Image (cartoon, rainbow, N blue to C red):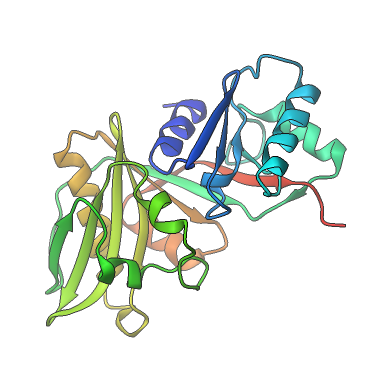
Amino acid sequence: MNIHELARRLARTWPGLEQQQLGQWELRAAGGFTGRANSALPLGDPGCGLAPAMQQVMAWYRERGLAPRVQVPTKLDGSGGPADQVAQWCDRAGWSAEPWTLVLVREPRSIGATAGLSLAWSSEPDGQWLDMYRYRGSQLPPAALRVITAAPAGYLTASLDGAVVGIGRAALADDVVVLTAIEVAAAHRRRGFGRVLTEALADWGGRQGATLSALQVFTRNEPAVRLYEQLGYTPHHRYLYRCPAQR
């Protein structure tokens, strides 16, 4: 699967609350909660020239009180990608770049040992699940629940001796299951629970018919990248967000 196709599938599993097409580009807004739900995905033909398209992107986000932002996927070595012209436009305009996010993929497979955890699934997140999830280390803003549940998904809660110790989310886009919101309580880290959660989420997708499991992680989060690679995930591509430089 090429970068363009996978990026489209990833977007479907974490959509903006408001979406609009600009030709083949996707404009997404959700009150500022997460970059994925509040950025343009500039893949394909916007139906006009590049400069007019970027002007429309900037106007669309500013009308909603949001900073203009585009998500720019590229090859792992940075040698190119489906949004190269957008990246070059951002360079010329002096737009800043946020940290790289790595997209990793693997075939779903059956889960092994659960490390003594009790695993429960739901079609929507309950209060305990939401209490465990943190956005950049903080409590969730008002729009968060609507964004998290904007696409159909399975919500996993892991408990140990009756106490919630981890959560995760898995959403399908055709034959791809996308894993998000994998969290382990601070007091229970380094016990293999993150491994169990990841495997269980991928297994859920496989049982729903997915042939590929995908997840996204900041490249600077080296412990998480190492864990996923140990579980057989391999880097597919990476992306970053570009936005006007602060003045």
